Amino acid sequence: MDIQALRLQIERIDTLPTVPSVLKKLLKVIENPKVSLNEIGSFITSDPVLTSRVLKLVNSPVYGFPGRISSVSQALILLGMNVVRGLLLGVSVFEVMQKSMIGLWEHSIGTAITARIIAQQKGIPEPEEVSVAALLHDIGKVVLSLKFPDEYAGVIADAEKKGTFIFEAEKNHFSVNHAEAGGWIAQKWNFPRSLVEVIEYHHKPSLSKTMVVQSSIVHLADILVRAKGFGYAGDNFVPALNPAALQILNISEAELSGIVLEMDSALSHADDFLMQDD
Amino acid sequence: MKSIVAVSRDVAFTSMLERLFGEKHKVIIFSSLNLALDYIYNSIPDILLVDFVQANPSAATVVSDLKSDSIFGQVSVIGVFGQDQEMPHNTVLPIDDYLRCPPDERELEARIELCIGRSDRVVETNPLTRLPGNITILKQIQHRLETSVIFAMAWIDIDYFKPFNDKYGFARGDEVLKMLGRLVLNTVRQKQPQGSFVGHIGGDDFVFIVNHEIMEEVAQDIIDNFRSIIPTFYDSEDRARGCIESVDREGTHRTFPIMGLSIGMTHNSQRQFKHYGEMAETASEMKKFAKMCGGGCFKTDKRVV
Ligand SMILES: [Fe+2]
Ligand SMILES: [Fe+2]
Image (cartoon, rainbow over all chains, first blue to last red; front, side):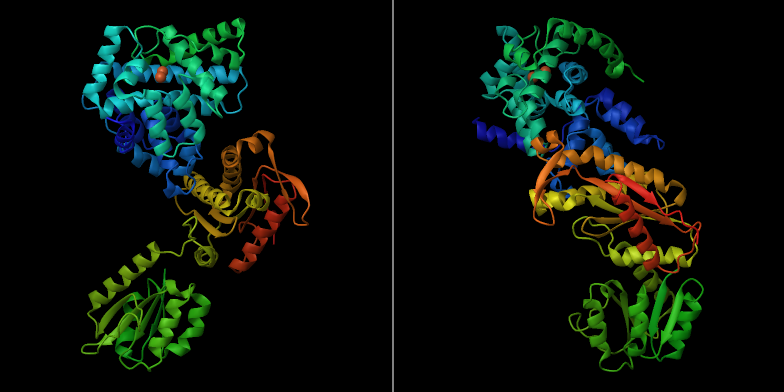
C-alpha cells in the first residue's frame, strides 16, 4: 500500500477503543452522580484513548477554536460535565484483545508520569502539556493495530524473529512507523501543533522543529520507563537513548539518578491502576 | 408565567382564552392589532394570537413587519381563521401556527402550550457563541425583578482584548470569544445547575446570573479558568514573553499584558432595582471599577439603597 492510501485509511478512524479494565472503571466513574470534574479529569488522563477522545472533541471546529487545547483539565472546563459524560458513554473496547495492549497502556501511563517528572525537573513552563504528549506518544501503535490487526501482529512477530525494534519492523512493513502514523491522526483530529510534533518525533527528537525540548523529554521518558521494565512497549529490549536528546536537555548524571529515584515511587503508585479490579 | 396577547373582536373566543389561560398566564385582549402594537413593542409578549376572521386588511402587513424585525421576530404568532377561510401563503403572512374558529378547547390549549415550549427552546442567540443575546438577557433579569427573586447579575469584560484583536486579527479574537462563552457557561452551570443564566451581550461583553451567595466564588472561578487557558491563544514567543506589542488608541506602540477578565457584579439582596436598565448599568459600572485594578479581578456593588 502506498503511503497516501495508508494515510487516508488511518485518517478515516473516528474513535479508538480502550482496554476492558479501563471501561469497567469508567462506568463506575460516570454512573456516580456526585463525581467531580477533577475526578473525571484524573481518570481521563490515565488513559491515552480517553484523553485523545476529549482532545479531539474540544479541538473540533464545532467549538470554534481548533488546535488550541492540549490539556485535559482545560478541555473539561470548555466541554462541560454533560458533554464529557456523553462522550465517555460512547467508549468501546478492543474486540479482540491483544495481550500486548495492556502492556502498552501501562507503558503510556508510565511515560506520562516520567515525562512530567523530567519537565518539572527542567523547569518547563507547561508540564501538563508534556505529560499529555507523553501519554499519547505511542497512539500510532493503537491506530495501526486497530486498523490492521493481523498485519500488525505479523510486524510484532517479525521484529521478535529478526531481533529488530518494532518501529523498524513497522517501517519495513508499512513504510511508516507508529510515530508518523500517530502524527497523522493527531493532525487529522486538530490536536495542537505542539502535541502533533512530540508524537511524530518521539523517536528522533532532534529533528523536531519547534518542540525539540518537549520531544526530547518524551523520548527520554520512553526509554527510562522501558529500562525500568514498567509496562510493555512491544520490544523485548530497550532501544538506545538518542545522544542528541541528552545534550538538548543538558541533564547531568546526578539529575538523571534523581529523576530515576522519583520515578520509582511515582510508578509504584500507578502500578495497580490497570491491574487492580476495583 | 407567559404573556399572551390576543387580538380579536370575537367575545366567545376571547373569553374562552381568559378562562383557559387567565390563571396560568397573563392574557391581554385587544380589539385591533394597531391598538396592541404599543403594548407589544414595550413588553415583547411570548405569544400573539391574531384573529383574521374580521381583521382589517392591513393586519397581515403588520404581522409580517413584526416577524421580520430581529427583536420581535421571536414572538410566536398564532393566526386564527374561519372554518372555510383561505389562509394566506406563509410568505405573505409569516405565522408560527394556526387555529380554525371556533376552536376546540383542548386543541386551543395544546396549541398554545406547544407554542410556549417551542419559543422556550428557540431563543435568539449570538451567532458566534450561540449564547442568548440581549432580549433574552433583558427578559431573564426583568422576570426575576418582577417576581422578586433575589439574585446577582455579573458583567464580564475581557482586558486588553482590542490590542489582541489588532495584533492577531478578528478570526483569532472570535476564537477567544467562543472559548469564553463555553468557559462561562460551564463554570456557571457547574456551580449552579438550576436557575442560573449566561448570555452574550455582544463583542467581549458577557453576562451571567447566579444566586448572590455564590457570585464571588463563581466570578473567581471564571477568572482563574480564563487565566489558565488564555495563553494557548497567543503565539509561543508572545506567550513566553508574557505580553504583546501592539498599537494603542493614540496610535503609539506599546506592550500589552496577556488578557484577563474584569467582572462587575450587583445584586438585589440589599437594594431594589426597578428595571433591567438600572441593574445592568450598576453591573457595568462595577465592571469599570474592576478594570481599574489592572485586570483579572471582580468588584461587587456593596451599596444599600
Ligand atoms: Fe514509540
Ligand atoms: Fe513508547
